[in-house]
Amino acid sequence: MKALHFGAGNIGRGLIGYLLNKTGYEVCFVDADHQLVESINDNKQYVIELLDENHTQETVSPVRALHTSAQNEIIEAILEADLITTSVGAQNLSRIAPILSRGLLLRKQQSKPLIDVMANENTINASSQLKEEVKKIVSEQQMDEILSCVGFPNSAIDRLSLSEKRREEEVALVEPYYEWIINRSEMVNKDLPPVKNAVYVDTLKPHIERKLYMVNMGHAATAYMGYLKGYPTIQRALKDAKLEEFLRGALHESARYFTHIHDMDEEGLEAFMEQTINRFKNENISDDVFRVGRAPIRKLGSEERLVKPAKVLNDLGLPIENLTTAIAAALLFDNPEDEESVTLQNYREDQGVEAAIAHFTEWNDDTIVSKIKNHYMQLKQEQPLKS
Ligand SMILES: NC(=O)c1ccc[n+]([C@@H]2O[C@H](COP(=O)([O-])OP(=O)(O)OC[C@H]3O[C@@H](n4cnc5c(N)ncnc54)[C@H](O)[C@@H]3O)[C@@H](O)[C@H]2O)c1
Ligand SMILES: O=P(O)(O)OC[C@@H](O)[C@@H](O)[C@H](O)[C@H](O)CO
Image 1: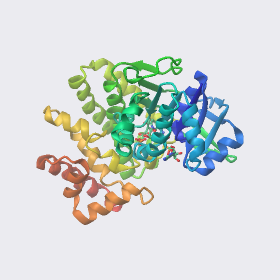
Image 2 (image 1 turned 90 degrees about the horizontal axis):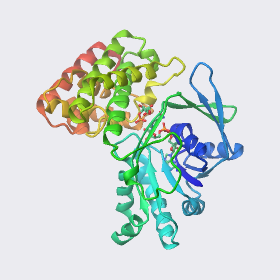
Image 3 (image 1 turned 180 degrees about the horizontal axis):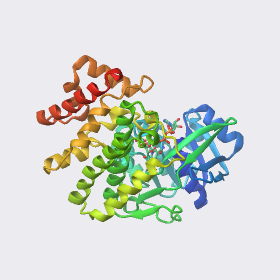
């Protein structure tokens, strides 16, 4: 069995490549990073190290990689693949669509078997988003042809995954915990063996929402508040009792979304929150606030981790103090090396904070805008040097 995976970054190697390899797939990565592609091809394997006390290492092999410029080889790999997956960042899905559509149309012309394409990104329904990107660039008839032999099952992935260069080799550093949840009902090829240790469900929504609106919400809230307090990592930030209390508060607010919208039980959510906080505090991990807070414009989006639960909870008349504080903190996230952070800061300086809140969150409610602005002023006052 052959799997083609776009994005050989942290989670691509640390979770997806790892589990596909364990399932028995020959994994071929596609990546835009020349050095990464070279390193994978030089070794035909890569190392994955568990971030636990033992730092256990495993080798994932055999693997190969193609650079995004190797268009003919990528098409060949699409034609040969039994499964196609991605983890390139939701903002890059549109970049994959052109080569993917060419390859999928050729598969149809050559009567290749049914295939599933699964985008594994931190966003709601990433595979559906990828499908929409394909739809934008092909004709209606071509889209019908693609959909007659391709499924775009959505999924949720969870594993704190980092990377470290050691002797010219990118080592994937991963926490022991992982979760890959796949919407079976959206798959067209159910003949393949299930991905090892993946969980197959018929309704993904509660799972992906809990991942994004609790794990990633809590992570982002900690990163933005941690940054403002001058902490370099999530783990250092959570040594500050006040920040841990803030994270707990934000998680408790968000948990109400799940009791009200998904009818989840409080006890289960409480356990999930504790598990999440403990994962973030893992002493064996050093997770940079700039990585976790990256792309603040994406994270402030109306369907995203901070704004969506806050909006729904507000409509239900439930508290959102911590969530709106986290949104305010995101507006102060200033990393000159992060393109979105630079755009955000420029917009805020040119247009003012109120305009920035409405523009980026698309939450056009005067009471809310002024609530977020108050938090923002408070945070700014506490951190005069940061902005
Ligand atoms: N790292 C984590 O802890 C983690 C966990 C769960 C989900 N995710 C999600 O997985 C996705 C990837 O995250 P990551 O942390 O691995 O990021 P990363 O930056 O480490 O990896 C992304 C990789 O995609 C490559 N890439 C970018 N554009 C490409 C393109 N057009 N074609 C091929 N390759 C391309 C990059 O060169 C990079 O190697 C994101 O959506 C992220 O939200 C990450
Ligand atoms: O990948 P992002 O930018 O959406 O979010 C940053 C982190 O919260 C994220 O990568 C987590 O580490 C991951 O989602 C854990 O499964």
